[in-house]
Image 1 (cartoon, rainbow, N blue to C red):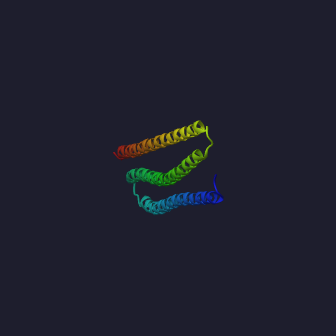
Image 2: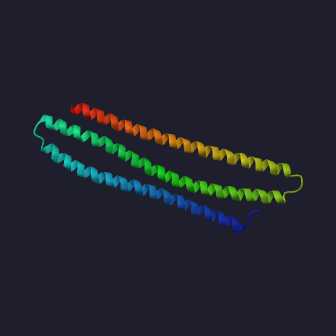
Image 3: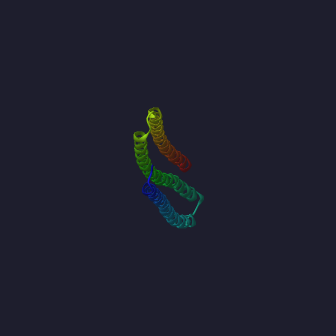
Length: 182
């Protein structure tokens, strides 16, 4: 059985984990805020430059050339912004997953130790129940590991698809801009 000190230690560890996860989430939010402030600052400067350029246009041909010149960087900037947001979200998710995996491994060790302790102190004739518990724990651990591997593979596939889609979108915008300019 668990002693009050063990229960208190467990609760303390859980609270520390909660605060660690909360700090990681806030770090991700801070990075997103920094990125958005940087994008807003850059956009404001670009709007001022574009306004000045538009006001100095002398004819329709010059306006069309200016418009074509502005479209391509916009698509690339949007793709870059999306990549940055994805990187921040992915990094934060990875950090949270590491903490969760570490906590799960620790809880798994403690639970296995509790099962072993219970098995040693179990009354005679309960070997089958103990063996069944150990088998169930082993099956649960194997299932968890399989889910983790599948989730990691899914994230890798999603990341590759995201990168490919972003590249294709930028290329399509560049091709369209070149056609309009020609």
